[in-house]
Image 1 (tube, helix red, strand yellow):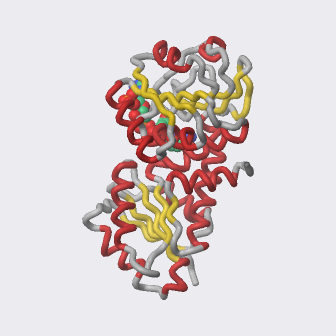
Image 2 (cartoon, protein in one colour; image 1 turned 60 degrees about the vertical axis):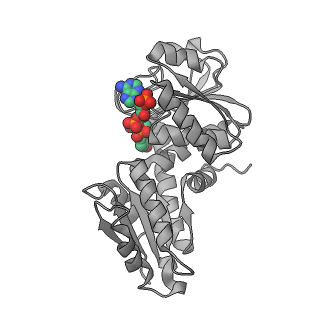
Image 3 (cartoon, protein in one colour; image 1 turned 30 degrees about the vertical axis):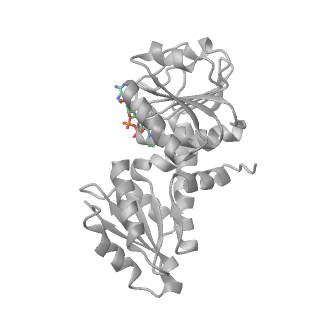
Length: 290
Ligand SMILES: NC(=O)c1ccc[n+]([C@@H]2O[C@H](COP(=O)([O-])OP(=O)(O)OC[C@H]3O[C@@H](n4cnc5c(N)ncnc54)[C@H](OP(=O)(O)O)[C@@H]3O)[C@@H](O)[C@H]2O)c1
């Protein structure tokens, strides 16, 4: 029986990126639906679950994408609500690559060091990627400082993380510029920069000035880069005694994780690949066993 991935995209055009990755993950057929909303999704889900018998439903799966992580999450909620009994298919949500990118970044960090009780700062932490990176760090037991340009947004993001990870140790910080970002990175052993494309968050020389910093990851590949001392291609390169990864250095693992996740949807009909589940795949893919 052929595998079918039903792409439910919240944007007006379904993502070509997600379709290419689906094909590279071994999917036989991809049915792409654009501009999908919680109001229109139920009949699409019924089309998925009423066509094959329960034992064969593992050959059908749903991928939720689009440029808005909030819209993707709302859609996922409605999709899961439409399932009942054995009439369900596996689901993955990765709007704008938020889950696979954050999972790859934190698995990269975790591969190098245990994160329990480690002070970690996430810059640009209110975006879809940064929020999830902070969540995964907190779930690993790191003591997270979550940074935004506004205290209000930082506090709201910290609250979201506490709701998702009850044991989270997370504080919110506001920084108006690179200098203030640097002050919030003092004492951190891990820094993850997840700011918007083209936003420089730490200026040249910061890595040298940040005593105690062991690992720096920048997810912004668009110049000017997020961490001026880190190149986009850096992959485990040491600068000033700090192990560095740039966006392209993390990108290889991110792509592998995305493909592994899509392939794993077809192993059962009840998988729900959300942030934590995608992180488990990233840990396995990165060879983390502890
Ligand atoms: N390597 C990969 O495979 C991959 C995949 C997906 C995404 N990415 C990259 O990962 C990064 C994060 O993605 P995202 O979608 O979460 O980003 P985003 O939502 O565009 O931006 C993240 C945060 O950056 C802050 N920000 C926005 N403009 C800024 C500016 N001019 N100066 C300083 N801060 C600014 C905002 O926080 P506040 O307003 O709260 O300050 C925003 O919430 C991006 O650079 C993206 O290109 C990489």
